[in-house]
Length: 492
Image (tube, one colour):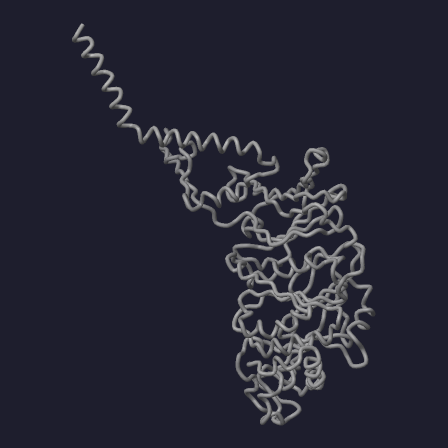
């Protein structure tokens, strides 16, 4: 009996010792179980519309496993067949490009939306990715039966210029208006690869493209008079821009476009501090909006994603302007004396798109009469020689009535609505003067002084053209009237 009691005591001490030895591990296990139960409890109170897309999930786990290995079930090895043939295995890792990158989503009407973004160019070039749109009302309990989906069609407006990424405008059209009760909701885009990239899988990313909070849908936007007569959609500005050239350009065009105009500037790295100081006075007056788009440089598209930017601008301001212009900040729109921009465009109102003839100006030649005072004169005031070489196809720029356009390009749109017309016959009514490269030069542009009405320079014929020079005095007075003398000391 004594031995038995002694053996029992030893067993009890052994159990206590085991528990003590693993006390830390037991605490960790119990803590983990407590946290798991808490998480499960909290998830019961999360709204049902809360979802995590595949792309978001990949983003969350990417710091932990940037290049995940294939699962054990998918991992294959080389296999020597009985026929003597060696069947090779292939092991995919990572991803070459994103399925879809959204920049903006905008309404095109009570039942239509436009989603503007980037997508993998090889995916669209060699495969057939598909898109589907879905509207989820905010009040799902009352409107559960009203959840609708729509097949979408895509537009590729960058004319094949894309690089790793190409621009995609996805049009979602529902069979009936959505959110008419203004209760709010979310537009989902389901972007499927359709086997592109890996024919074994049809991967689909669900993207929350647009959320309309309750009470924010304005149905009258689509039928009311536009806020602006003329709106400028600028391309991506990059590099070391000349503050003085930007100053001249904005003063000239605010004067030409008038009070009911607006200018949207997109900063891809070119709006440095001195350029910003030039834009600020006009921003304060409400004529200029500045958007920082430097983040787009992460994604390798054509020319600082120029096509992406202009399409986003088109759809963002589609119902806010009667006409939208697309040209660059080294180009100056001109209409003849005794006419106005309004009278010219009124005469062309039957057309949804007009293209504008180019007047190429030298960026080096100035008249010798300006030799002494050339540092005080504005660029378009002293660069007075026009290239008149014949037989060259010169790029045109354009303006559109945006409500009739689905997507756009750099030099014109190829995606007009049904029945919309384009005219190229605008000679004598409107044109633009192009001072190529001057916007990126932070030095005196007059490098050759000429005392002649015509000259052959660098194998090109030039003639004296003072069309814009004659307007310089009026533009300077306009700037002084509008913003005072705060930009007088602006540098080249």
